[in-house]
Length: 443
Image (tube, rainbow, N blue to C red):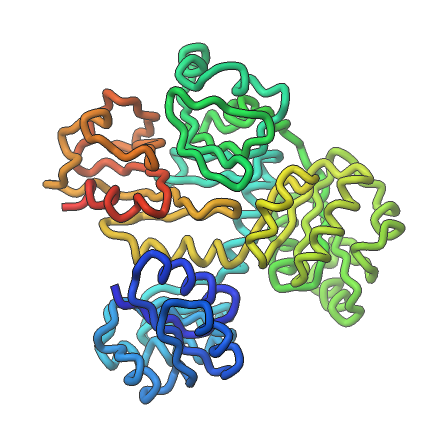
């Protein structure tokens, strides 16, 4: 697939690196010469210096021969114009990053097929995680009927006591399956003979009504939060504060930009707004944090988020969640006191990758500490999988089917489960196995 990416910021660079590594034909358009040169040094793709909304630049990128255009520059207007120009030149699908709600309205008439707002997606994801009160991931599939629950396995967790096939027999009263384990930076797609260790990042698939039991299985304690402390003055911090207030939590916002705190005070009169340094222990101690508090480090600086969250955890916060731009930090810092990580670029990647993957893809979920993906795909009539059991299908070891939604009814499959046309399957797969595995379910 030929893919044109406009904008080599955090989201554009991440997508370019990921897609080019998978062998896609990637072209990046970046207006900043220095940024473009830096990217070209380590990226196996064509990097063009120019204005992505310019017809001349798009012709240089051979946009007419491309399958997908992803406009993720920092300018909403430029992204819309790029999509419009690309459509006029014959491209198939366009995706644009648009943060301005007013500009989103009517963007489809200007050639934008799909609108993404990474910060808004991240804020909504944070609301889900905080609402469930403990797991580091709560990812809904099949219209919410199937849920992937993630978290750090505790030393006393029941899941560490036996191999998974034995545990499935012991825990036979409810549906669950471990999809994957991330251990010391390595992803292990789980199977019956897998053994879960304390400290593993476990991803468990279950049905919507069993999320709390899945969390208990891996030893993640459920919190009932009453207050959210949002640290930072970014747009993500702003949107997250709004989401927290809508869920009924008390909200505290801390930032050392006086003008920004005045703005927040006007926008959120029910919140407590503090003009202060979120990494100052004295400022944090004054909040008298306890088990009912969740702290979210959402500034634009990874180091600030990390330090603020570690201080908050040290003085008693029930859960701390840090925003990271450098994904490599997440695996390095696993287990040091950060309960969960959030990344706007991963939110964007998940929304966009469904247009790259083969077949009728409904959803793609990406993760902060592994390149593997959870993919919801509708099984096509006439595909190789139809009529075969999972055991007979011969899936590679790097793939597991974690859940199936059939006619709106969710199930956690086993090797005897037979695939039918129209099933919505949730597949967890390592990057090297994604293309061949999705092909099994596609006619």
